[in-house]
Length: 293
Ligand code: ADP
Ligand code: ZN
Image (cartoon, rainbow, N blue to C red; front, side, top):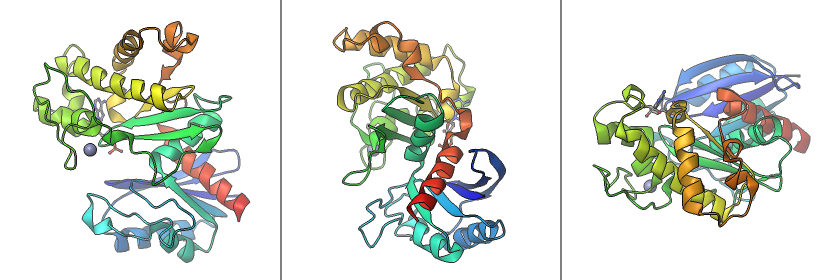
């Protein structure tokens, strides 16, 4: 049996085919252009592959309330052409198969929870630090939705005194987490691409500080059993020990758990599935869609 898995991103769409064993067998990537052209191209590709169901992990915000007439629509996005786009309904109708949608990070969190770094636990947070910052949450085995869905990237942060750009760059909130710590914020603050900054550059201490504040917020609100950090910026592996040290120091022993006080190296971790969490999560959503019908 074949399943369709779509990772819908602001710059590219990654289309995959997977099987019952959660293996990805085929994958292509197409640029995200206008919704009409892009959705038509995606429908054509999936239609040729005889899929039993479709799973979508998407950029957002996206309407996830299955009772809403706008279920599965991209609602509001800086990509203006995509505002109010019925992504899920358009694909479901064209392909005639069961389909489920969630945020890209919820899909990744689901994959890490079922098959990756959080396998066997009851909860986890998956955070991507890339062009944007976002978190997917699994709590007691359920993907967290709610009023809309978590938007961890936009929590307010305490700016560091030695930050040369403490005002931040989020078009909505300026110095929120995303406005201070996503890839583009690093680039704007230091005048060069994040991937070109050497490991001893002050950018990384500052980045670790902001990401540690985020981890502390997660620990104190959601209390996840594992925090998984992925996305382009986290390719800088030296960030992990810096973040862990700040989290441990700031919590100051208040959370009486060995996971934090003794073994934080296995608490704040890289994705167990590497860069495959998103596609695998979309595949798992497709399998869920088939079960639900
Ligand atoms: P997206 O979020 O668009 O899906 P990524 O997760 O790759 O894609 O994030 C892209 C952002 O991450 C860019 O701002 C880029 O500068 C930054 N980035 C990508 N690779 C690295 C790297 N190896 N080190 C630091 N930053 C990186
Ligand atoms: Zn913001």
